Image 1 (tube, helix red, strand yellow):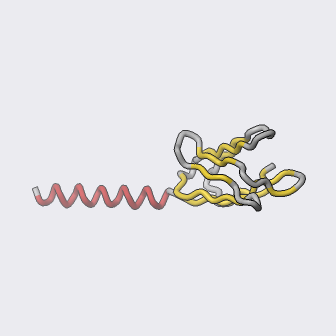
Image 2 (spheres, one colour; image 1 turned 30 degrees about the horizontal axis):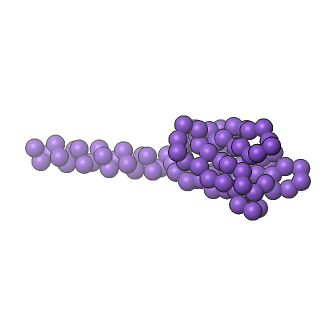
Image 3 (cartoon, one colour; image 1 turned 90 degrees about the horizontal axis):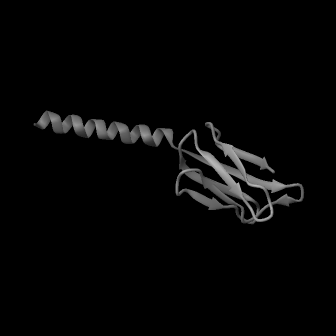
Length: 94
């Protein structure tokens, strides 16, 4: 019984560490031809993770899977989807 408990705890800890290692942070700046866009909604597809850009068009999202898809939406603009694919920085999105 003790060995089963130890194995279960070890496997749980291992899976937690693997999940943390695979998660990443992504930063970026959203702009158009006139400059940075403040208030753009940046959301991770099929999750509750999201943020908005600051006054300089910058955003940061933490704990994303490497294959996350980011949805960008802004009033008056056509939305865009960007696949992260292991990137940690997305700049010049127009």
